[in-house]
Amino acid sequence: MVRHLRSVIGGLGLLLIATPLAAPRNVSAATATACESLASLKLPNTAITLAQTVAAGAFIPSAGRQGRGLAAVYSELPSFCRVTATLTPSTDSDIKVEVWLPISNWNGKFEAVGNGGWAGVISYAALSRAVAAGYATASTDTGHVGNNGSFAVGHPEKVIDFGHRAVHEMTVEAKAIVDAYYGSAPKVSFWNGCSLGGRQGIAEAQRYPADFDAVVAGAPAVNAMSLHAARIAINQVVHRSADSYIPPEKYSLIHDAALNACDALDGVKDGVIDSPSRCKFDPRVLACKDADGPACLTAAQVETARALYAPVKDPKTAAVVFPALLEPGSELGWATLAGPQPVGTALDQFKYVVFGDAGWDWRTFNLSSDLARGVRQDAGVIDASNANLKPFFDRGGKLLMYHGWADQQVAASNSLDYFSKVTKTTGKSAVGKSIELYMVPGMGHCAGGPGTDSFDMMAAIESWTKTGRAPDSIPASHRTDGVVDRTRPLCPFGRVARWKGIGSTDDAANFTCAADATSNATR
Image 1 (tube, one colour):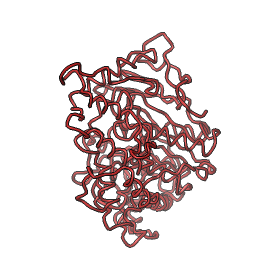
Image 2 (image 1 turned 90 degrees about the vertical axis):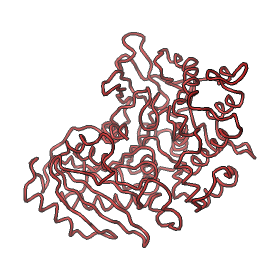
Image 3 (image 1 turned 90 degrees about the horizontal axis):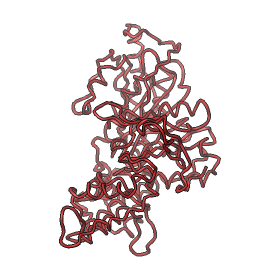
Image 4 (image 1 turned 180 degrees about the vertical axis):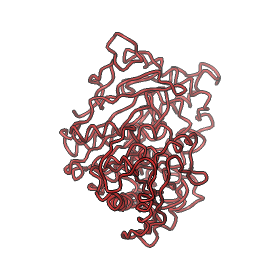
């Protein structure tokens, strides 16, 4: 979450523009009245439940919603107008949204922020970062309470809300609230999210191409049905026999061996595998010569490790169902997908959405038949796999994707696959103009890991919308105990950061983005 806030919301530079409600930093009675007057605003299928001026540093989220270590973020907030509303586009909809409006220093733009997991909560911390940066901003719980899929049973309309409708309805009504408050519509509208938030942004581009001018989608969980099915299938492989499970205490053993084989391939030995596609690491080098032990893998564990790096295939047809779920360098995070049971988001998808049975046993999962059932039942509502973004691009829309190579939850290959399909569908001329992908060496799921996982994607997308071209590189850093100890450029897919051969390998100034001969990027 903390990493998501750093990269998803952007910088803190504020642009003062003249608006009918511009006010000094201290809240005036006139401005407060203007904010409260939004309570009477009439919008379709919308009940505004609160319109309240929040003084600088006075925001306190509801109990249990603050987020670890975020008290300082809230205490530094400027004054803003907080609007809460309930949206009911269907008779079974109960979509909660919040719209936050800077009282002064609005930059004239709108930034909607995404969710994680199964949503079910307003993204307060992300709203805070956005409003502090001068954006009018909005978030939704997507129509249910609780970060799990239990809401789906018997509620197909709520599934549609979660899949895409809640974000769209929030966006339409939030823009109307922005217009009513400032007397002008946003001049640019951005979406910004990671994981589920990444999927939400791409679903917007697919279904509602006029909602946003630009989308930042980190580690997007698109192709959701196949992703969830592959996650369950790979966990079945992990537990296929009594000795096939790899205990967590062996993860570092495998990780060190992968680094030993591939870390230095980029010319710099730094604890990060920059181009996992170049890595030919075979876990067989760790095979036990005799009995099982802490410094080796049994024959069954070797095959498990190999399976985790390999594409997931239909056991009947051998057709690839999903590309590799994990890459060399991700081993320290294997507990997410290779733990005692499948990751919870995948379990909930099949337990509640596909089978509608809270008692469903994942051990009975049949990849061949159950994935097909899920795809038919979902009918694209949650899946978000459509690669035809031409309507969005034709309007001048920009899609900035990013993904950590060491992502332990949403496969890095998922973004590579979707990026490839989009560029094949729309043509290679879209690359750099309408779509770009930045892979982050060593970064886990939206954050973490030894890679440079701190960067400002809002600054990058702002630059792109102004210049018309995606950035040739994006500055990134790694922090230890809050102190920057490494910087690197993030390069567009098809290029990788190469050390110039002189100077510190922890300084981005000594690197350049060079062509990666191992990628199949369309450039």
